[in-house]
Length: 271
Ligand SMILES: [Zn+2]
Image (cartoon, rainbow, N blue to C red):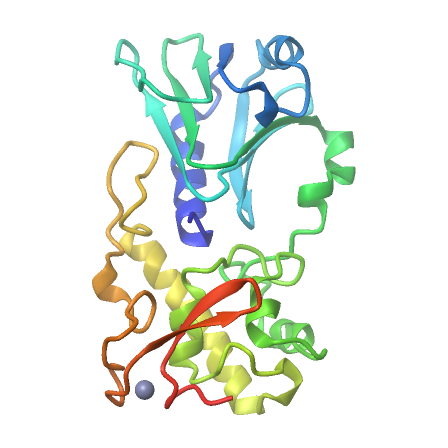
């Protein structure tokens, strides 16, 4: 699943590569990923230029000329590939965009994804993105900000995964973040001690920055089709059920936490 590090890498690469390119045409295979009729979508994007690309949580925002935005959501994962002039397009995609200079990019969503065109005005009211919270990699994500977020009564894992509170963390990086902070995923947030909150805050940022430095999760590829370098070896308890805990040797367990699974060391992370 593409999470904050992977989405951040995509946005940075797209920002670098697509600057000021002008859309020529769009080939849409799967209309349901759009927020409008496909003919309308193709007509609307034609002639618009890319101003800049950034992400907000797990959404990629491409700012276009004429006060428009192209919004991409990669869902559980997506082959999002840049296309050089003259290069062969991937065989499978749900949507592909071509620029007037012959370059382009294509998206093959693994499961679900979105490609939406919205005006600046519509963006303010855009349901899926308007309430996305800032992410731990954002400079405004201070310790005080984090402390304010976790005042209420809610299980800590659910709270961290809630995109309206913290943007960008899904059910991959969360396991090792909680393990390193020695916190059980079902612990009530308002029962955490202040040192635990401080630890959690630092570990969250460190873990995501590290994944970003390594170039994201190994089973995903970047905008240039290059494999990411954050391999399984970097995981502590995540996806390591039945193996010994790297700290105490207790066997790591996979448990059900609401509608997600969690990997924990039952000794290091007690409820
Ligand atoms: Zn342990």
